Image 1 (cartoon, helix red, strand yellow):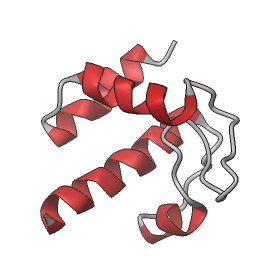
Image 2 (cartoon, helix red, strand yellow):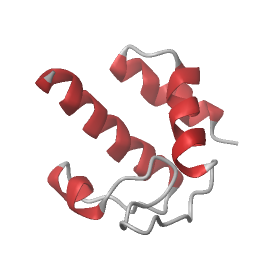
Image 3 (cartoon, one colour):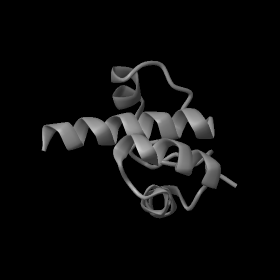
Image 4 (cartoon, one colour):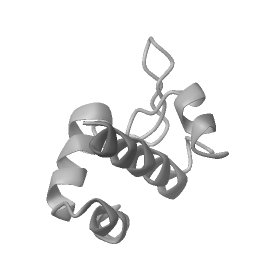
Length: 80
């Protein structure tokens, strides 16, 4: 159900959208309401403090979670 969002946001990473979807599958099994024992939330399993550093995101909202995850991945790509 999130393919269109993965297609939309993967472009900003220059990733194939299926790679972004595979990451979400591994992290959350596509459950937008999941919270890990460490506090990571949603599809991309983003921690609240990380999301705040990239702006305010509702980590249980699928599109906002993907936006936060992509922002984090872009930052890591720049760093490395």
